[in-house]
Image (cartoon, rainbow, N blue to C red):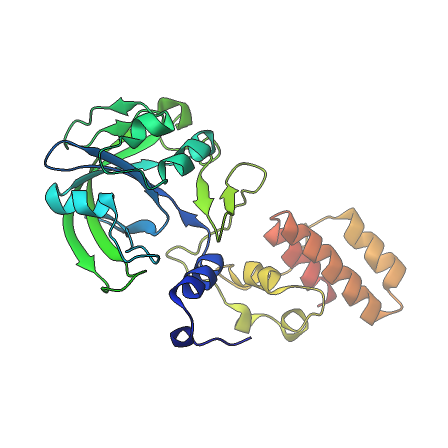
Amino acid sequence: MIIDLKDLTPVLKQNYLQHAIAPRPICFASTIDNAGNVNLSPFSFFNMFSSNPPMVIFSPSRRVRDNTTKHSLQNVLEVPEVVINIVDYDMVYQTSLASCEFPKEVNEFSKAGFTAEPATLVKPPMVKESKVKMECKVHEIKPLGTEGGAGNLVLCEVLRMHIADEILNENGMIDQRKLHHVARLGGDWYCKVDETNLFMVEKPNTKLGIGIDALPAPIKNSKILSGNNLGQLGNVHEMPVIDPSFDDERLKSIFQYYSVNPAEMETELHIYAKKLLSEGKVQEAWQVLLALN
């Protein structure tokens, strides 16, 4: 299916985009107006865009239904400060409740059952229950349009972070396994980040990977190995060579049972290499794949 967004209603545009561009982290923003009225509202149009200076952006869009603006936007226009409270699974249902369109004078902290905690550098309060809180100064608000659904980019500098000790590791860094982030998908769908769905991908650093284009043809053209598998193999910094000391019982068995049929042997070697790659054993997989040379 191919769709041109100019042909869609604002509701359909939002639906397709929010389902496709996901998961999105949630900014749980607490703001305040000149009269001291506090607002607490979640936004999934949010992310980090710079670490030096430390800048995050969230976007309170104009309502598609009636083109009105949200209280959070009105507040930061009056008082350019915000606390961004990170949402985890322990607070997701309360956070959703805070997204209700209560009248301006209603305090969402009370409605959603959260505890307002004084910030140290800015006027809006923090959500005590949030395990990571960021006190921010608003640098700029950039409107992206005037119609319903148009975003308003709120560019915020993070001045100070408050991090719960319970999610830190022994080195004082955030342990990703202890902070169960919640992210927004399309419609009513969310996702929870925990150890059951976490995985690690070794990142290229100052050394360059050899690339998939440098892989030997039998490997690059394998009908067994996936694109992800080839990406793992191509991320090594130099082309591996056969290690005479590599000792593997399954590899020996493959050679023993398939020595008379090179095509079947290659298939079995690729199947075994794929298993090793699924376990993160890239060097071992390379030794298996090089065994035919």
